[in-house]
Image (cartoon, rainbow, N blue to C red; front, side, top):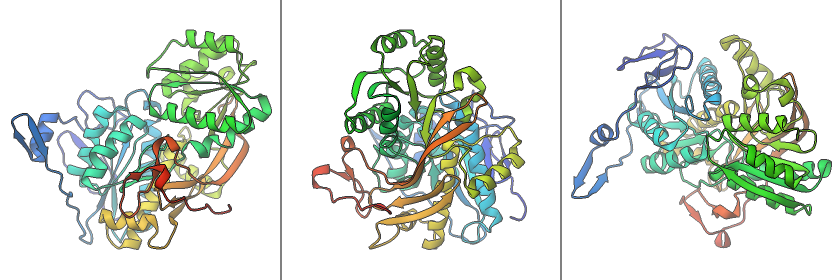
Length: 464
């Protein structure tokens, strides 16, 4: 839209509508530079912290935002360009850049250009929170998108989105633990991935299951949901164990799996841990004896996994590049034109698309970027059970007003030796159920969570 503006910053530069700044000691994504880290002392000083004895009071006013016609609207994206989940960082950034580019081609939002600021969340809370604070305080973002990892996502929601009253739209499937006035989840929760997938695998391969995962909230929440689904078909759990993030040697775990002789194994491992496990599992000769299905296999893992390792593993999620929708075809064509034929899109990058599109529709409906008004617009308004929806490459994504999670499309695929994912089953318009372990989330109107036993029942989903 018109001429590109170039933002001056310490060590930074502007590329199109997206700001990339140098990060002290950080890696680069291609030739892009990222913003340097701001120290905690520097941040507290800039934030207006008042110290008294051993106590500190951090002032948390609503950050100013501009309603002036002609000025850009700033939004932020938190992606893991470094750390254990960095394999997905670049494709998430690409999806955000392209979605904003396409939005601006259509006139932007409220007739204003949308400017996307991308920050490396470093995969962990200690780097994700300062990155989110910069998006809000330095760049004036009225909406932030993130994070991939649950530990970072929970910290950013609790320490930035809720206290500073900034809309936070999440792109990554997770355990369903967050309930907040400003938090919206545009991807899957465990029931949407596992409720149909676990019985499908049990019927095809057998009812004896083994679970492993990294030791943090998403794997634990997902295993709990898997066990509930397995119980409905009379299945048996032969093992459940967790390992630290960054595990590279799975030999002892594999030995225990081999001894247990399960029919199906579900590994809830992340990134480099997942790659290491799949390679060692294959090398141990177990691939033809135990069926493996997970929620974390996608095209980003192809470069690090040999064809013979890929073949035959199952993955269940909201999006794969093989999804047969017109929206997917159009987006991939644009993606390859902009970034080259080797560019990929996974469920994480695809999840960024409804985060931006639903927010944009809500701003248009509200007629303002004021976060409180946008929240109500995303919810859908008085008397409605469902909020905003958007058509994404996966299909339609719709907000459920009560708890701010979404109805999504789900696909079960089999990884092929050539790196593609063959769709073997699909379940459409899957409604979210917040796991009982987190209480029943009531985020609309008053915000916050209340105990499951006193909560109103969730509305029925379309088609039920």
